[in-house]
Amino acid sequence: MDIGIVGKPNVGKSTFFAAVTMAPAEIANYPFTTVDANIGVGYVRGKCPCTEYGMECKPNNSQCENGTRLIPVELIDVAGLVPDAWQGKGLGNKFLDDLRQASALIHIVDASGGTTADGTPCKVGTHDPLDDVGFLDREISYWLMSIIQKDWKRISRQSSLEGEKLERLLHERLTGLAITESQIARAIRKSGLEGQPDKWSEDELLSLCTRIREFGKPMIIAANKCDLAPEEFLNNLMSLEDAIVIPTSAEYELALRKAAKAGLIEYEMGSTSFGIPDKSRLTEAQLKGLEQIDKFFGTFGGTGVQKCLESGVFEMLDLIPVYPVEDEHKLTDKEGRVLPDVHLMPRGSSAKDLAYKIHTEIGDGFIRAIDARTKRVIGADHELKENDIITIVSRR
Picture 1 (cartoon, rainbow, N blue to C red):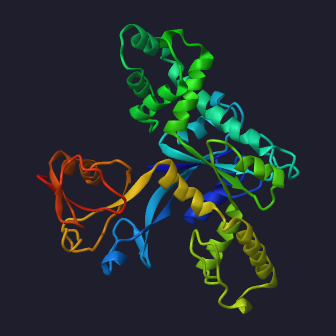
Picture 2: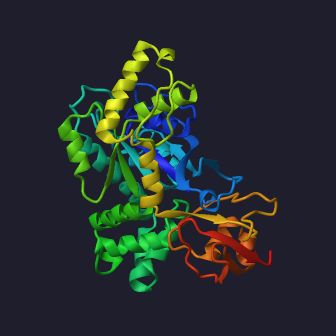
Picture 3: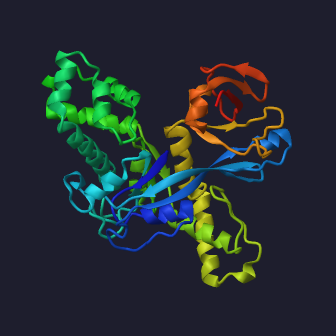
């Protein structure tokens, strides 16, 4: 499960990526700074069950800090998208290819209106960020349509004349794009298209592709540089219907994370405040900068960066943390580690789905599962809940 960081050039994508992952990424004030995709790991936060049991956990695939489990999520910072990228303009082909495995997207928008459609810097307030929201959605929709159109005659004929399920045929065509058959089925229902597919117009097919993007690659809008944004621009973005829009300052988040790493301030990712243990260690310029960030916090309640990531994972993708253990009494794995692993599972997943998430052979050999809290045996179809601790009994 990957999260793609997308947007036109020069809106702060690489800064956002660096702030979330603390991984190095080239950051500069000109288009196409990012040519090859940057890949890194960010973390979403969950309450670790170790606090519930009063135990000291020993995480294996994640981290635990004072009872907060930091669950890793892979992020992809791709090359900037420009109008007509789906036709190969700019670095469009590479951009779209890098997005194939992304399960959800964080669209970084320059809320200040300080960059033109192609990412060239301009005077703040001279470019409407609403144009950027619509253009990126269109580009991805056209990209999906270009893939489908290559085989649309066969697909539409088989669906219309032979009665084969359209969602299955489209899923076969979109293999490798991390879009499920069920997501395509939802898109078909939501599109409201009627009649036989072989009679649909190009506009109707594009409408369907827009819905496939909506369900297959859901998107959060990060209204970045909102500290510079004209009030009208920010209000218009926040008023968008059917969209999650989060005021964001990736630059402030990166500054705070770097200062905390250097021991100059006390700050944890996603916090709504920070502390300065010793002001004498900071220069006058640094103190002034922190005053600006503190004022920003008073208005927006944080930088918004961590909120974007967690909204993408927990709201858009609707994932829940589940903890598999081998010993339901001691909450350990075979090496004696307490609560070693946590997996993000789609809400509605079953115990058997968790078994397959752990390993294919464990899923194939599934016998039963045990709820470690109640010690009750649960079946393959038992629906998992958030923060469940589960033991899988398997033949393998």
